[in-house]
Amino acid sequence: MKPLHVDAPPHSRTATAPADAHRWHHVLNAAAMVGVLLWDVHAYLSCHRYQPYYKWFGFLSRWTLALVALYLVGVAWFAEESGAPRRDGAAARWLWRAQSVALPASIAVVPLYWGQVFVEGYADKTHPLSSYFVHGFNALVMLWDFALSERAWRFGDLAPVLFYGFMNMGFMWIYYSASGCPDCDLDLEGHPYVYSVVDWRRPRAAAAACLGAILIPVPLLSAGLTVLSNRLGNTRAFPSYRPR
Image (cartoon, rainbow, N blue to C red; front, side):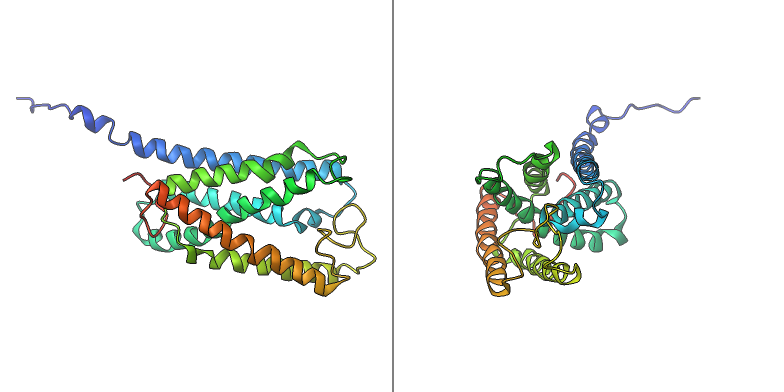
């Protein structure tokens, strides 16, 4: 006698649909930003083929682009592998730290770039199309990731991005000192600085500009993300990469 065969309840066939949709959002985010990263590197090599490769990484926006792409790849992997309990805790903590930097940093580079685009003399320069994605699209993708993660942002979460800002400040000073400046080209246009407001030939003014660019926008961004988090009703201490 054949055993009785009972079909699975209809809802069980679609039980994984929300999880699959959630995972695909993360995969598409990661693929989009890796594509922008590769596109921007290609644009740099095409426009500055006689410049050293490492100068691509001299700009804060490129630091942030690389971090965003790396973070989103990590999220896509974690969403796929989150069933492994030994990976769960450590991966979640590292992704929390990465999001704490990548989210506000990706937003901060938008006004820094677009503010220069409309400055007289700068607006006439040719900007690769990829630049608009590096300084805008990445922020939109990170805000979407923030909504998906359901993370409750708190004002005190600004500590990692403050460290990131000071680390970039130290990097720019070392970059200037190690490049034989002032007889050097750091901005790919023959100037001894990456950004004109951070000219280490005048160290006090450069340090003041860096401190102002860190200590004013970062608290404002953290306050804004706290308000946004409350509006979205986010309650999770750590980002979640799976649906409830």
